Image 1 (cartoon, rainbow, N blue to C red):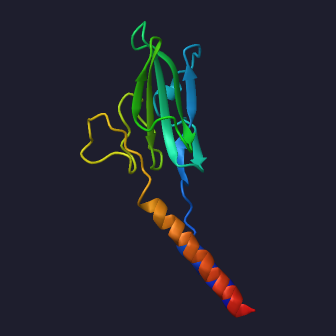
Image 2: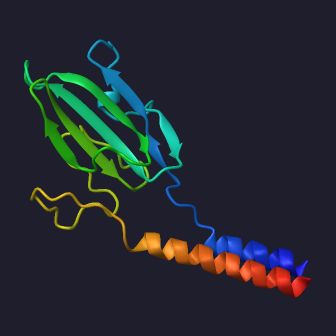
Image 3: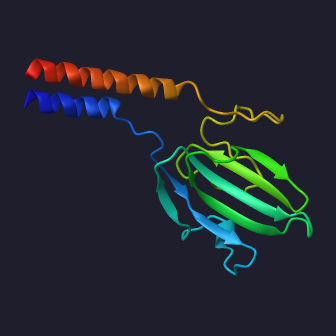
Amino acid sequence: MDLRIAVLVLCALFGKAVGRFRCYACSFSSVDSDQSCLTIGNNTNIVECPFTYCTITRQEFIDPIGVIASFTRGCESFPDFLNHEVTDPTFRTFYRACTNDLCNIGDGIQSIVGGNLSPYPAYTGINLLVPGTGSGVNIKMNRVLFFSVIMILIGLHV
């Protein structure tokens, strides 16, 4: 009985799931008549995101300028870019990513600043900020500590 309580307490302390938050999820293309995905409303679909990022991808035609070819809000583990803009002869594509609950709001043109992707105040340079140190290291250490304690408790119980 004591072992079960100890395991439950340890799970509560160290079992924090990475990337468990909600994201808006919808899509629009230039052939669709329903443009509701372009703005967040009461009926915008919300999903539980098991991954790291809420995202927006907005693709505009170069000619005619500013006309939206496609627009997507979603949840991704490895987006192509975090907050970046790519232009080719046909399209101008805005990639936006964030790491907070329901943070993939906005028109997709402005960078999303939710989460630990952007410094404060917002940086206007051309560098791309990629999270990779900090909490990720702590989570790995927490899991190692968690499993070590479990093994010790199992060894004491036997």
